Image (cartoon, rainbow, N blue to C red):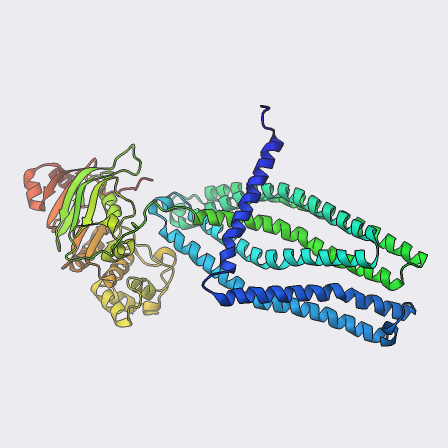
Length: 615
């Protein structure tokens, strides 16, 4: 068998892209023809009928033009001359106006259909992204995801606007004009039109296939530059800390330089495509006009016929020019939509079981049974640990960085599924209950509370949808931040900035605590909740956390041992296994791992650090 050539590879790729394009179009179809919305189908049918009517009028319009010219030149016969040139000119204008009017009516009818489809697709994509697991999100860049969604939705909008009501109408109008030219004149007019259209379409498609590769490369460089910009801006403070503005600018400019080169190639190829299209259209127009001019000289045609042929060729020229643009954009839209539908097709690592039931919390007891887990199967993080947190009990989990402390929290919230053993709440395996009910039962206060770029009120009220003003204020009072909020000029309407950067670390933590208090969960997970704060602020926050944990099951993940001395039990993790457990005093008396960690931290030899999740 001879080796595959580059042309063979290109042909295979093109065939695969065409198949992918058709699959993408089929994915969009249900949004335009939904089973549960008869009114949408009715609007689509009505819009198509109006479309056909507008094209019939558009094809008939040049006939009025021809008869008006014949009347003015004294040619022609019959009742057309009796009507007069003025009357025919008025009829021509009315026909044009009706054609445009029906086109606009078509757009009005379809607008609700298109916007409904866009909204449904955007919502489905947004919802699906939130369903994807933490593993997926920490391996993808937010800037790249947002750009894929943005381009995908715009691609759908373009496809809806042009594929149904530009390509379809274009084909219909070309067929009708071809029939009229053949019927009124002779076969050579039809042959000229068909050859011109065939060459134009072939040239456009061939060059566009080449341009799509360049456009894809340009998109990739655009996405890369956007990711670098967003990553740098999100880490604004870090850039400042390391005086790295110049390095970030060079990094961004390097990405933009690659985008610039790709964009220049794309624009050069566009110029070549536009010139080739104009050459083919002009050649076809000249041939048809020469045929008509010869017919007039021979006396076979009238001057009105010459004008009508010219009008028809202009009508063909305009949509053909439009075809080139639409085809290029549809090709790109299909690429962009394909990326979005690939995202929609991305399966989640963590899903509800088919028979999952809502979690029934009785006391909030948490049990780890011979639990094992590893982000990478070759590197286990937790190795068969067993632990029970009784209802209303506070249990602290401590240990060196990388021992698996924070991983337990992620498994409890079911960001990941265990690879061995089980994790249960009141006897129910978290894999057997719905994620929604599980998340509703657990309140989390992380090390770094991230706030939405909105008001303080919005961020606290986020804890429970529909919370009243009084409930928001009560939660703020319980978190001991109401007085601070009241002292601000705009009070609860104060904007916190992106990720809450306008607030201090302690203020953000208190807003996060208020938000969790408003949620009122039976189980609390405090994941290094005060490790990033200074000692004075930490002590103040600890008072709030102790009050918050009253009557709840609390799991505290900590590195700073001074924050967990009041816990009912302390569990010491090392290398993924439990090496000690007991009260603070009992563990000190045992003079083991915990006592050694306590001594180091008391002497200041060890700087608290946080556990970094593996991917």
